[in-house]
Amino acid sequence: MTSIEVKASRSYEVLIDVGLLPQIGQQIRDLIPNAQAAAIITDHNVSKHYLTPVTESLTKAGIRPLTFSMPAGEASKNGAQYLSLLELLARDGLSRSDVIIALGGGVVGDLAGFAAATYQRGVAYIQVPTTLLAMVDSSVGGKTAIDLPSGKNLAGAFYQPNLVLCDTDTLRTLPEFVFRDGLAEVIKYGMLGSAPLLDVLTQDLSQDAVEPVIIQCVTMKRDIVQRDEFDHSERMLLNFGHTIGHAIERLSNYEISHGFAVSIGMAMDARAAVKQKICEPECSEILEALLARFGLPNKTAYTAEQIYTAALYDKKRNAGNISIAVPRRKGKCGLMTFPLNQLRTWIEMGVTP
Image (cartoon, rainbow, N blue to C red; front, side):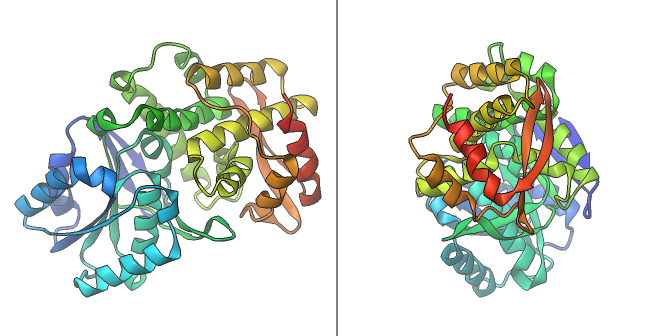
């Protein structure tokens, strides 16, 4: 088993191995000895596969399991589900000495984490990611949120988990397109800080051989979060492709998945950076080749004006400016801040290959 320690406002371990789900009850008992109950937040797809082993492990450890299951997908990450979840926690008597478990992908992790941050002003929670995207990115670092009608992740909190448990066995039940969705975030990590990771991605990468990639991505994110936990500078690099990507998600009413939208956003940002002569053309070519290799999109039918209008609600705006992560060369990104009204031109440059 690999253990990666994250030293943030709350320090915790990220455990990565096969067969970890049956251990979750004992992990909680060791970590939170007084816990009497655990609320498992999950979705309808994940619960069919993994709810039973988690509840059995909790029961064996003498912890009362509660369950909140919701429809899968970004559309569930909303205020109504959030309030329903808080009401369930209150009605079933979850106390501040108990724990919340986020069992699922990024949507589940974001919603459960925000509930943990706000229910009774904060209770312990454990991230149990079951998708590649959640394992390499969203389960680590303490960003929690729900979406508002105006935009994605506009209500949330920085709230670090008490433990992240990555059981790579759960990747075996992923639909192929969901696995590819996570590969977009893996490519992001290679682009922003690891040319060797980009080289690894040119080789065969099956679900059975992905654990070293997960370890590398988590280690990279750990290092960035420890230096900039609250997203003031370096951590903003992790948003490469996300300003455009989030706009595309919103325009599609979240029918375009997060990874696929970020894939388009990264390609557009790279094309714009090349045209601005701040990115080596080879870097953009490497990115586009990797996206094509894994069947990830590099363009959208939405117009630059539509994307720009949707992106105006991006939370990375600040005093009339916006900061985006921009590729410079293979395995290297930097931050660029410019007036918000120049974002339209940037998007226009990225739309056309």
